[in-house]
Length: 442
Ligand SMILES: *[C@@H]1O[C@H](CO)[C@@H](O)[C@H](O)[C@H]1NC(C)=O
Ligand SMILES: *[C@@H]1O[C@H](CO)[C@@H](O)[C@H](O)[C@H]1NC(C)=O
Ligand SMILES: *[C@@H]1O[C@H](CO)[C@@H](O)[C@H](O)[C@H]1NC(C)=O
Ligand SMILES: *[C@@H]1O[C@H](CO)[C@@H](O)[C@H](O)[C@H]1NC(C)=O
Ligand SMILES: [Zn+2]
Ligand SMILES: [Zn+2]
Image (cartoon, rainbow, N blue to C red; front, side, top):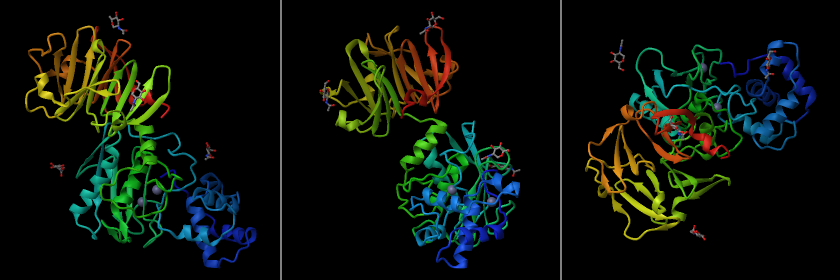
């Protein structure tokens, strides 16, 4: 709970407010403002010392600045209205998108357990909604979430009103809706929902998916964002949850902590290409990084699962589901797409995870689940005795491959956010990297 502000000397601060900033706001408004600032904008060091008088005008200015209001240091009506909006219980004091020290989960599977449910939704609705909220994150980072039903989970979740076992009792309807801890041991990641709110799965009252997704952002290490379109904006605002995906600001924030997932990667005329959803990022060895829509370069291709470059013929192959295309620069060759079964895959293969051409053996390796195939580019035939198990034949790289490419003689294999630099000759991992490393300027 360490990032939360402590309660403090209300009376003194109330007086300071009245002295320092004469306004037309009522005494009740001043109380609201004082409580709000002490809860969300006070430096807890000042509080604990017990001697330092809070600088109310400074806190008010910080609050106005955070919400993009006119920074007057006065309690005007816009400021008061913002203070009265339903919001998250985590403080806005931090200046960063991540908590101090950037705490994050180190494991690849994070467990959660719901110990107390709300009576306003069925158990099944709560379970499904919580799963969906975690999925918003597992769709864009290499972290998986698993619900457990007994014992201690990494993230313990409960719905309860008022006092619920920590120093931050809830406040009845509206006001604070929920709060969560940054990642860590013990109470780290724990997430509490105020059961005095009216939880729904719709637009009226308080939508559980949106609040849960926001709180899990904290539980994964995200702080509040000043971007009003971000999920991590501190006040609650309903948006349509049908087909909802993580807003851009939050995605970049969480990927900066955990790395990105790529659908595919390949070298391409001495540049590196990374594919994700409908986009690709191109990184030249001497030039910077640029992002493009896949369709804008190859109009018939909207996303890519796997890709490899057959440099001997200056051709690259892009795979999507059971189809593939051959491209030369930005030209798609005639006669494509073709079915992947032309390579000799059995019918149960519905999708290629990754592919890479190994120049020294003239073989293309195709990765599917925990297995891989080897295709002889000289005889244009699949090698016999395949598929083989990835873990057994590529020791150290993991059990699956999401994306693979070759660069300066090394093979690079991604599994989740972890990438192995692999020496194919010595059959050894040279070092581990984060997928992010290639795209550090993004
Ligand atoms: C609070 O005080 C502690 C101990 O004096 C110090 O290490 C820490 O950096 C301070 N934190 C802030 C936010 O000033
Ligand atoms: C704990 O939950 C698992 C299911 O996740 C169940 O199989 C097991 O029996 C439970 N153990 C106890 C002690 O309740
Ligand atoms: C295709 O590549 C050529 C040069 O290689 C370039 O002039 C042209 O703008 C590219 N077209 C598109 C749609 O990217
Ligand atoms: C891979 O390992 C072999 C044998 O240890 C070594 O000769 C070769 O230089 C290594 N390759 C790269 C790209 O470093
Ligand atoms: Zn929050
Ligand atoms: Zn709590």
